[in-house]
Length: 290
Image (tube, rainbow, N blue to C red):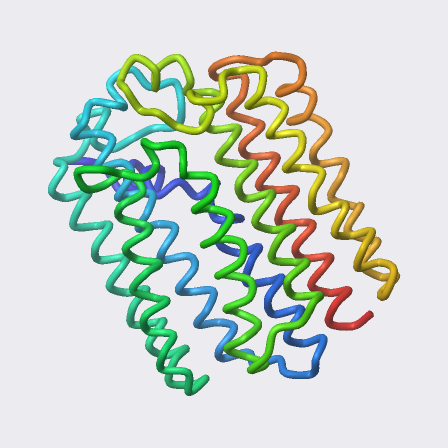
């Protein structure tokens, strides 16, 4: 039986910035058009956090039963380590998805947009089939694109829309910036796992691109939000404070560009997520009060 500490570790708290950042950015964009709704924002945050915990458990389960995690250099996994039964981890994933659905229903009731139930169902399906099912899209090089869509465009613009009943150009810019950094976190993760993923047949985008081009992709993705900062800054100079997130990227960029391998890349995931959280928080405040 896995301990409570192991279950918490299996939930991968370091991935939480990927859930928190888009809700912050979307809420800031909604506040920028004077439509901030704290209850709806809180429920949107609950949906995002429950979904990311659910997808972490789902990945743990699916990768574990496939043997992908048998020789893992990354963070602790419940199934791969043998600490928890696969069925228990699978059930934990679906419990989180169910709770996310309940919170999402609350968002729908408060906003009045019932068609968003279909979007919620699509998000849950995307979370499960990332590594689950017979043909997981995460094994076909589509993981980064899915992260950009779900934790960037859908999460940011969805958070804005359920509060403001509209989507602004600033909101779209924030969604692209958060999506790019969220994808960069996954790129760093998959860069680290290229050797083991090749052996197990997991064809991530990093495996398809190769080591050098994956590192180039990471650098390009981390530059995108600062380009967005400059563009939005032409209309709202306070958004330029988004450059405060740049120092947090110095170490991960140095590691990726410098050719770090294996465990040496683990801090890059953490620091990229932290930079994303800073950028989203500062940008949200600038959009709300600038």
